[in-house]
Amino acid sequence: MNEDKNVHRQTGYGLGNQEGSAAIMVVLLLPVMIMIMGLVVDLGILVMYRGIAQSAADLGALAAAQNLNVERLEAGVIEINVKEAKADAIRWVEHNMHLNMPHLRSDSALDIFVEVYNVSSERPTYHRFTGRLIDDPTVCVLVRFPHQFLFFLKNVQDYEISLHSDASVVTE
Image 1: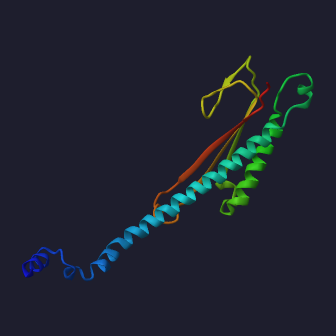
Image 2 (image 1 turned 90 degrees about the horizontal axis):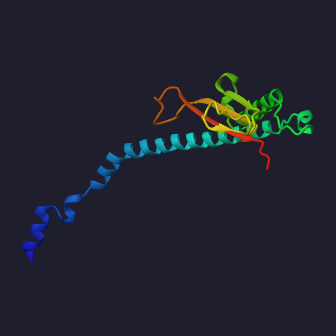
Image 3 (image 1 turned 60 degrees about the vertical axis):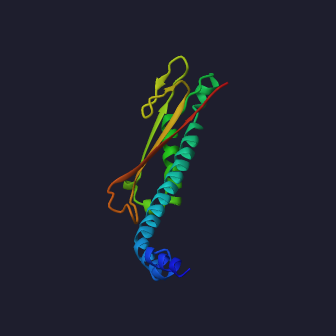
């Protein structure tokens, strides 16, 4: 029986050899855990900002698509009023972005592009940003803004978040 205890002590399987090993593991893994937490926070903020911007672009596109040319509509032609649609889209996107992302207060940090396609199934066109075929009157809103990471990815310069949303007026 004494031989078994000696074997455990020599091979390192006994508990007597591992005093302080937990402290060493904590010291070695703590920087790794802090880096992982920083990466999680940075990517979480990125996903949150993309969601806010996507919602703002969706709202802008939907608001703009409601600006129908009433005179043409009375004649049976569905057409979006380009000037009003662009103004509404920009106003809705700016309002929602500045409301939910106060650090974008300067207008130079936020780029909003609005395209209005007054097309029909008889004269379709291709979407400028996505290349898809459009055969209904459509408003496209493209939103771009810079994002600065806070922790782990802080050295990544000029990361730009860019997304778009479309809203079409469809007849059945």
